[in-house]
Amino acid sequence: MEPIAPASVSIEPLKSPASLPACDVLVVGIAEDNHLSAWAAKIDTEQRDWIARGAATGVISSKRGELTLVPSAEPSGPAAVLVVGLGDTDLLDRGRTFDLAATILRKLGERVRAHVVIALGDQIAEAHHDALVAGALYGCEGQALYATERPLHAPEKLTFIDVAEPAIRTGRIIGESVNLARRLVNQPPNILYPESFAAAATAMAQETGLSIEVWDEKKLAAERCRAILAVGGASARPPRLVILKHDGGGDGEPIMAIVGKGVTFDSGGLSIKPSDGMLDMKCDMAGAATVVGVMRAAALLGLPVNLIGVCGLAENMISGDAYRLGDVIETRAGVRIEIHNTDAEGRVVLADTLDVALQHKPVAIVDLATLTGACMVALGRDTAGLMTNDSVLCDQVAVAAQTEGEWAWELPMFSFFDEQVKGKVADIKNVGDGRWGGAITAAKFLERFVGKTPWVHIDIAGPAFAEAPKPHRDAGGTGVMVRTLIRWLMGESD
Image (cartoon, rainbow, N blue to C red; front, side):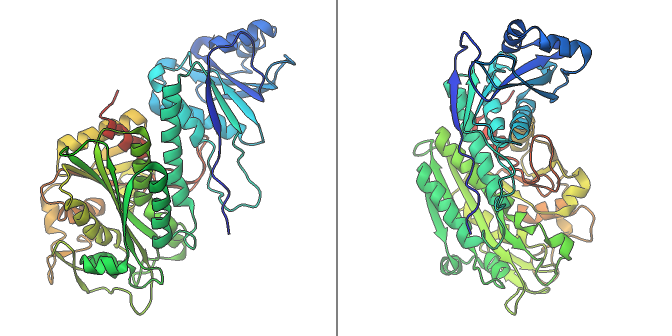
């Protein structure tokens, strides 16, 4: 069974031509106080002031995200014109630009359109032009990978007027990398499991020049990764561990590490989930998918950093080989875990995965995981939780998220939470004391496996997978935090 192929869109820059370009749709802007973009003004002059009249009567709105699609009155130019409300252009930061571009392409994707020309470059800051391109590609991808009829139609060609080639290249790499993460999350669990995830990561590494190492169950046993093996022990699909490397910083330069939870399906194990809670548990590998997306972008952008990405991959299933409540597992780091809930499996997988990352002696570790429902209770569905042992590193990640328009908020890591994950039979247990502070006690569990290395844990349980669509994106995988971590690795922020 083959999925719908990823959107293949030709993208090119175009310096302002003298006349309206021939295309299926020309996208122009109207800002606050009905201020028209250069191309909107040009159309208005040539086509009897219909945009100005529409704005004056309220038929066309300048409110950000409002879209008005009309046939063109010029037979030799575009077949249709989409007038996009931009609102106050001073507020069009990177995140809003990304979302606006995605909204435009999702709207136009309702039907087949071969060529779309976007002429918004003069009203969006040049520094955000790559976000305009990335957002447009984001709007071309949906979750219906196996629908017999394609519900979303990407154009064959996208042309950006007055957007420079470097911005197009960067935007394309970022947009496609986010979409890769989304596509992995949206794969059904009978298609994506530890071995096939590792195969997809291997194919990406070969295409981009990354080095990759895949540990199978024999290698995991030889490396004493007993925690990953315990979680994956009940599945017919054995676990894997993937190590991706980007050597962009040169010999002797510091190494950064990103680590992802990759539970490709989570039944809850013997602590079985109810059906409603299990339906979307293919998304429990979104942290690992984010790692793959970031590593792809780092390679293709040629980021001048040494970066490793480590993905711990397992299926949490039920059989006679399932790990049990009350089991004690000795991790690769030598820390012994007593299991109080087999549905708190992600932190068990990450215990070994973080230790593998730690052996590379990174100067910073960021891990990503759809780890706790408690984080959603605290912060809602759209906000990631940040927990850390290093405020400087956490601030860097938080600023990167704010710059890219991705929501993240730091939760406290007070020392008294350590007491709540202490074991009675072994060193540590895999749940806290009751339901309170569950996102933090999960992070405190992980903190035991990073030593003194600066570390940020990002709980993406809420924003990684959307139950309902929004104007700028489909339901399903969102690719959250790919853009944030690329911005962090670039060392840039607004």
